[in-house]
Image (cartoon, helix red, strand yellow):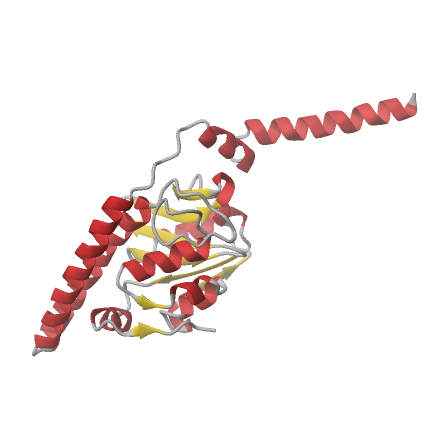
Length: 251
C-alpha cells in the first residue's frame, strides 16, 4: 500500500509538471506546441538571390564613391550610406531563410536548400551580405570567435548570469544596428531598429530558422552567457566591406 501511495504521488507530480510546461505560455514546450500548430514559413530563395545581387551592386557603387572621396566628410557620408544599406538589407536576407529546417550538421548555402545549423546560418548571411569570409571555417567557430572575426574584443559586450529582462533592457539602450549574439551553445542575429528587438536564428524549440520577439526568444532567456557586437557600427568593418577585403576567421 505504501508503495502504491508513493507511486501515485510521484505520478501526480510528473503529470503536474507536464501540464505546467504544456499550458504555461513562458515554457518552451508551450511555445513549441503553439507555434507548431501554425504553418511554417516557406523559404524564399528567389527574393534572396535578387537581394544578394542588389547588395553587390550597391556595395560596388559605394566602394567607387569611397575611393573618389576627397574629404573626411565625404568619406563619412559614404560610410553612413553603407551602414544604412546593410541595416536595411541584411534583415531581408535573414527572413528569406524563415522555415528552413535546422540540423546540428546542416550546411545549406541558400534558403530552403537543405538543413542549416546556427553557425552556417550566420556565416552564410555574412558572406551573402558582401563580407569576404571563410563560410565553412567561420560557421564552425565558437560564437565569440565569430564576433572577433569582425570586431576587436573592446567592441564586444559580454554578460554572464545577467537577468534576461535586464539584458534585453541593456540592448534596447544600445544604438540601432545588426548585432551578432553568441550564447552558451548557439549564435544568431539580434536586429535592433525602430520596431524593437528581433532575434533571427536557426534552431530553438521549433528546430528551424525563426524570427522571434523578446517574449519568444527562449534561447536567449535560457543562456547564462551572452556576447554581442554591432557589426554595422564600426567604421573599420565598413571600410573592409567596401573594399571587399577578407575577414580572416578568428581561431
